[in-house]
Structure formats: structure tokens, C-alpha cells
Amino acid sequence: MPGDPQVDAVQKRAGFHRDQLTFAFYGNFVIWGWLLYSFNPSVTLLADDFDISLAQAGLHGTAMAGGGIVAAFLSPRLVRRYGRRAALFVAYAAITIGIVALVTAADLPSSLTAVVVLAIGGNIAISAAQPGLALHHGPAASAAVTEANGVGSSIGLIGPLAVGACVAIGWGWRPAVAVTVLIAAVTAVMLARMPVGGAMTPPARRAHGGDTLRADGEQPLLGSVEALAVAVVDPTDPHDSAADRRALNRLPAWCFLASLVAAIALEMTTTYWSTDLVREQTGAGAGIAAATTAGLVAGMSVIRFVMGPISLRVPPALILVSGFLVSIGGWAILWTATTPAVAIVGLVVTGLGFGVQYPLSISLLIATAPAAGDAAQSRATLAGGIAVGVAPFALGALADAVGIHAAFAVVPAAAVLGCAAAALGARASSRASKTSSREA
Image (cartoon, rainbow, N blue to C red; front, side, top):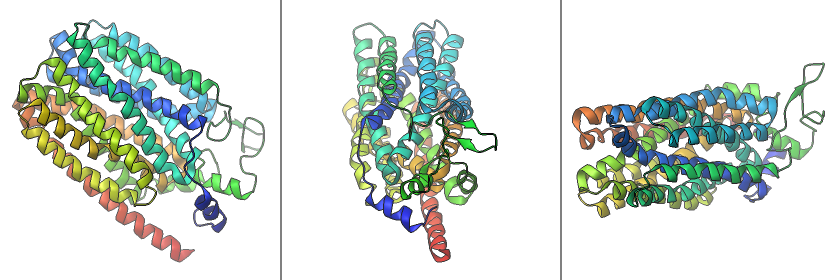
């Protein structure tokens, strides 16, 4: 239980040690990073291919949201019933089917359907891997999750450049997006070599008395100090999860969920539509404009590697608040840019802010209910799916009405809301911790 001196002693001894399972989990972030940062900048190019409006192209965000919502319900159930590895293999199959359908799509309905399928797979992959990574690293979860997202965005950094290169040589955007299938295959091979157990939770089954047993038939908690520490972060433990799920309905959890929604909305709208903004404001060609998105991803990658270790020494909520403020500064540079070079600078600064927003929001959300990690992740996936569905479509529709430059003025407003939610969540968490300490 939180506050138990034996558990605290175990947590203080724990450090951030990467192993083969860590890197296997990281592979899922690479898949998602490449998919997002190669496909999202291609949406404007897809609109040109299909001769559709920006609002219609923005429906791909809605389709991605639909897949995310389905994954929010599927992922925790797949993990509990079939185990974490089986859930991830299901994700890779859906990603492969969706990507093949997307790059061969000839019209809007078929491409939207493909995005729903690949989004189901991608969101299951992250929803299954992220709590597993947090469980595996325990007290160092914020560093592990932040670095994992950094690895994903670092590889994803090549995505916009690959799109720009493919467009420049006349291949179009599709070959760059298709690389996602190869990354999924490599990750599947890595995962297949990992033994079941620990964070790679096995399938659950029921004993005659109704207690949940591990696949090997033993009770999940053995009574040792190490088992007590695992109980703090194990989302499969039937004894602690009920109390922790109640914690998900308290103010700190809702605040960090709100900051997470703001973070996802900001990242998705910027990666979807910054290409069009750069084209309009600077006169850059399609290939160059798509490639400038790499500046955003570069900023996100750099800050994630820097802030991962720092989050173990500086309160993560303080870093999160700062991230929203930095992103507003980056937006101002991007919004006023008249050359591709200045636009890239604005995107890099924006990325420095965006880079800490999602990983720290999800880490802080899970920390509010550590024994219900998969439940917290499921709620985050559902809320994030809604944000993905609404934000890009809304900004695209607004751009059709008032122009992309005026439409981008909603970005700092969303950042302010996210900043306020993070600050309120930090304050509420501090009060709850002080109350818990006095009661202990």
C-alpha cells in the first residue's frame, strides 16, 4: 500500500535500469511514432490526391479517434484475458492490415476505414505497452515512459523527412507510411523472445473460489517486501485495483486527464495542419512543407531524452506546466513565420513544449492510481481518442471557413487550458499527499 515503509524502502532502492523487456516495449512507441509523424503530415497531400476539402481530410482524425475508442475498451480486456504479449500481437496484425489498406486506398471512404483499423492496432499497442513499461520500472516510471516516447518520436523524426523525400522524387507519400509495417514486424520478433511474467503479464484464469490466479496457478501476491512493492504498481492485482479505481474519480486524476487531452489535441492538430500553414505563409512546396514537420518532432525528441532523468529530481507536474507555456512561445514563432527556416524554428520550440506534455500527463495520471494502471490507460485512450476525433476535424473545418492562419489561433487557447489543468492537478495532488501523510 502507498505509505507502507517497506514499500517505500524498495522504491528508494529502485533505479531506472533498461533491459531487453524495456527495449521490446519501446518498439511499440517506435511503431506509433513513425505512423503518426509520417501519416499526419501527409493528410494535406492526401486531400490533394482525392480532391477533397480540409474538413473532409480532417475526418481521418475522426477515424483515428474511432479506432482509439474501440481500443480503449479492447486493450484492458485483451491484456487481462489473454496476457500482454497476445494483446500486442493482435495490435501488430491490425496495424499491418490497416496500413496495407491505407496505402492502396483509392477514395476517402476506403482510406477512412483503413485508418480506423490501423488506429485500433496502434492504440492497443500503446495501451498495452505503456502500463507494462510503468509496471516494469515502478518508481522510475516517469523516466521510462518519457524516454519511450522520446525513442518513438526520435525514430518518427525521419517520417516527415521520408515523406518529403518520397514526394520530391515523385513516389508520393505512401511508401514512407508503409514502412510502419516493417517496424511492427521487427517489434513482434523482439517481443516473441520475451518470457511471460512480471510486466509481461500472463493470461488470467479463475480459481473455483473466484480468486484471480496467475497462469501458473499461484496467488499473485506472495507476501514478500518485493511483492508488496509490486502491489503498488501492478494493475492486475485484484485487492488494490478497486481502491485505486476510485482514485481515478478524484480531482487530481481528472486534472491530469484534462492535460493529457489538451496535449493530444495540440500535437494532432499541429502535425496534421502545420504543413498547410507553412505552405500558405511561406510559399514552400509540398515536399518542403511536409518535411518541416520534422522540426516539431526533433524538438519533442530532444526534450524527452533530457526531461526523462530530470523528472526523477524535479516535480513532473512543474515540468508539465512549463511544457504548455513553452509550446505557446513556439506557436507564436510559427504563426508569424514568413520563411520555411523561421517556421522550422517555431516548430522546434513548439516541439520542446509538446514533448513533455503527453508522457508526463499519462505518468501523473497513472501515479494517481498506480494499482489500476491499465484502467487509467484505458480512460486516457478513450479521452485521447475523442480529442483526436474532434481537434483535427474542427481545425480543418475552421480553416475552410476562415483560412488556416486564423484557424491556428485556437492552438494557444488549448495550451492555456492544459496548463491550468496541470497546475490544478499538481495542487490537488499535493493536498492529497499531505492529508495521507497526516492520516498515516
